[in-house]
Structures are given as structure tokens and as C-alpha cells.
Length: 378
Image (cartoon, rainbow, N blue to C red; front, side, top):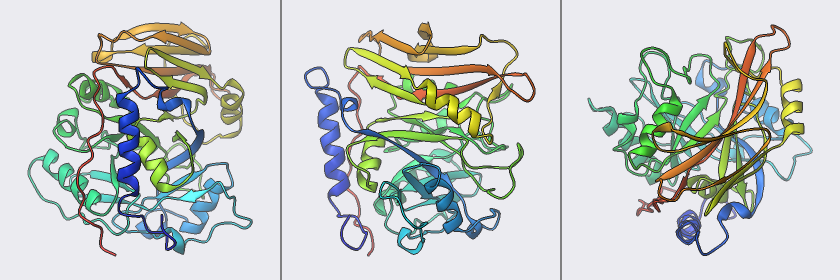
């Protein structure tokens, strides 16, 4: 970022090129996940400016600032909120930033977060093919200097499918979990879960990482049928806390997604996938963040379960406990890890599950492809 808060035209491209080079040499160099620290963030949040949320940008930013988050995107529907116009609480933590963004909201329930943009992204895209409309949003976001997260593919009656996302170039992020009560993350008889979609895309050769967000609208009233804050987040490993570095780290898959579970460790490749749960922080979150909503299940074993998952969503190995150290079979195109914590909900005694999703390690060498960008309007 320059002194005026705008990005240098080459900064993000240079950062991404460096991480791609590192990824391409993982069998020779230390993997990128061995460096940096964890930053907690939310990429999808709303304010009164959208007309159906209940709090100002200042109130929303303060909620995350005061609860230990490190970054936030105020992703308003077809509105660009300049972070410089949002007053943060005093004293302001030095390790908290706003990343400029927008929720590009297109008819037919196609919504995308335009992350780390420099200006408003247009949204009046029309085409009978959903893939084409998503591509138009991705291209417009890149022209504004940003990157795209496809939001809530299982939202209400007009979901996007894996087939809609597969042909889209430069779409590297989608919401695997969204905390809005109107989003059917886990699927139903007529729609696959977002996790099934993810494995379908990964198995078909697409490079795409899974994001978790809360999509918060309601900060004043807390209820199961309200879209409350704190129900989903990402933990990004990066060398520094600034918009370009955080964005570049996410494009390289240097993060995990969560709706309740924290990890001490999540190291991907080149030969092993290692995961360790932060049990103390997870317990504290579940005991103090009563906005969380787990997934109710009929059967399960209380405690932690770590799974290594491969193509077509095949469970390759399972560990009961808080540490997993898996040897990567490099004949497989990808592997990913998932942590499940099962407990009985204190108020109802129902079994419920919370998750942390590690990003895939690609043994087939796929990596994001930088593309020339149209300079953003100043």
C-alpha cells in the first residue's frame, strides 16, 4: 500500500509470483506454511448501508476489533466502503486492519466478495449461463485490483453448483462455510453440500480453496434465525498483516477455515500433512461465543476426529485425537485435512459438530496463474 492507502500496481502480483515460485519448489524448499503467524479474519460482513443489517460500519468494525480479530472486510452489497472513512475504536490495536472490499451482488443470487479492491466493482452482468456471469464478476474484480471469493453457493433457492464454478478462470476462493441461517452448507436431498462441491472441483483439476465467513447482518439481536457475527472465520498464516500480504497468502492456500475449531498447526506438504488442534482456544471459544451454531447430528463420538481426504472426497485415514501426522501419497492429485469436534450442546444435550478445514496440498503441481490486470481507476 502507498501513503494514500492505495495499492502499488505491482505489489500483489509480485507477492503472488513469489509464493507460486515457492510452491513450485516444495520438494526442495521448506513449505510456505512453515513461516509467518496466524491472523484471524472475516471476509464477509454487512452494515446498515445495505438496508437490511442493523449496525453502522463503525459498530461492526468495533465488534471484530474488540474480540481479537486481525482483519475484516466490510463487504457491502454493491457499495465500496473506503476503510479510511471508518473510525476504529480508541485505542486502536496496531494488529487490526480493514481490507477494502464489496459484495458484488448480481441477480439470480450470484454474490461474490471482491477482496482488496481499489474502487467499486460493477455488478450489472447478464447472461443465461451462470458460469459466464461469475466470470464477468471475477474479471471486473481483477480490473479493480482485487480477487474474488464466490459467496454462499448453497444460498436459498438459487444455488451455484460445482459445474458453474469449474469453467471460471482465476476463481481460487469460495465459501465452504457461511454462517447465515439461510445458507444450506451441508446440503439436502436435492443439493450437494459445499464440501461435496469442493471435492468435485478439486478432483476435476481446479485449484480452489475453501473460505469460512459469518456473513453477519445482525449485531443487536442474537438468535438462531439471525445472521450473527462470529459464526465463521479464516485463520491466515502470513509474514505481515497488510491487505496485499493477507490476500496473497489466501491465494496460496495459507489458511484454514473454521466454524468453531482452532488449530495450533496446519502444515501442508511436501511429504506430510500435519495438524494439531488448539484445544484450549477451541474450548474457550465454544464456552464464550454463544452465537456459534454447530451442525446437529444423530450419531457421533464425543471428542476430536482428524481426517485426511483425497480425490472424490475419499477418506484416506482417520485419527481420533488432537494430532494428525499423515504421509502424503504423491500419486494422488490432492489431499486435504478436516478436523471435527463433537460434543453435546449444553442447553439441549443434542450432539453437534464443529469443524476446521485445512486447504488442499496439490501433488500434481497446480498453482494459481497470474494474469495481466487492467490498471484500476484512481
